[in-house]
Image 1 (cartoon, rainbow, N blue to C red):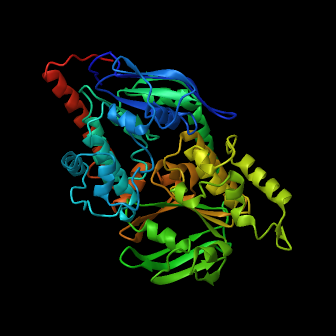
Image 2 (image 1 turned 90 degrees about the vertical axis):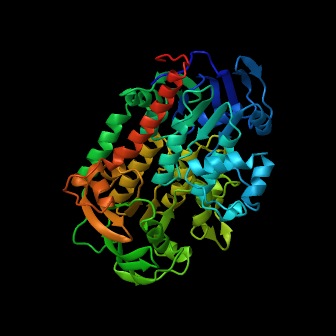
Image 3 (image 1 turned 60 degrees about the horizontal axis):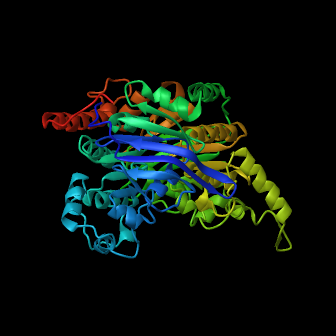
Length: 532
């Protein structure tokens, strides 16, 4: 990949920030050249989001300097940063729910015609600007936020896990647009936990670990291993150990299934879905976006009633009218969107203890000593970094997700329903969750795991079912559940037949071609380039 110049568009040096006893950043640095897409990498809690918030004026640093186009700046607010050409799109869309889209645009002084142009580029040209933001799906809100940022043509566009909650088609659009930003005099800072996205669109990567900058890597073929090594250490060997543990774990046979689904259906989305989960088993669910997996988990978690079919827990029929009914039956749900699952303004202790109140009270009074002991055991088991104390919203995304799991682990798990629980989470936290799911299975629990990352199936699951068009179209044992086989099944192709095209690589290849085309076009216009 080639770059426009070695002169710096943005430079942050010696950036430090503490929150009480917690050190979020310690003399971190970041140097971004014009015309590049620059990855900012690191485990959850490494300081990436804090650094972005400092660059946009949402957080004041304790120490350090920020220079934009050679001039030192002190940014006091996101609005001031925006006027100065620095704009960030965070994981959670920054739109006011009770205003329509047009009113949200007015608040940020976003020009409508450029906004509509970028909506078209991102595949949402039919958006009604009179729609209330709270009625727009999360994935669409993220695209709106991105289009709003692009519309003002910022010098530095910062994207914090922009693709984490997007379906494949929108992710491809976003990566194409990001790739086309290369080669001019503006830059993109790109945060993602998906190495395939980093390889597709980024020129260089700055890696943070424990609040410090530990390296800057040119993104080339094979650079992924170096980036992972800087972030975490010997993660490859650790992952191999998890996979070996999965393959060698004993499976229950001849026992009554923990959970049985027979002929489940829901409107036009789910049709005659059946499966069993045995005690001690992790069953994977694989599906492309919108194939009925959302409805399946909603039914199992008690938030939606099925149109037909039957559910059995330990062999006994059950019927859920409310999520509380599912919890009483032993089915607990871990959602991908941790913001919906947690009380963000409350403490770690309160969030974990919430489902325990009926178990640890005596004569109507909560036994605070018992509560504290149980919560602390769960925090230690999941290695939750709760040094900041106070509100859950102050934790990193990975630690927040571990809190959602810990609340169920604290009370003992019968059957856990996990819907993409590692989405937008760093590799180390993923590894911890993988190990926990195996621990739960080995203790006799059953786990149903939907994942959008196909490699997780062989790491964690004993077998997988594949859903296409609301129906189970394949069941694959862990030994055969590699990514090509799962992808073929997800497209409803024969698992043992060669795929007509490399569907998995097609989108990324297109993104790389678009990014290279952008750089080549810059060279043709006589712009200076370097091998960076």
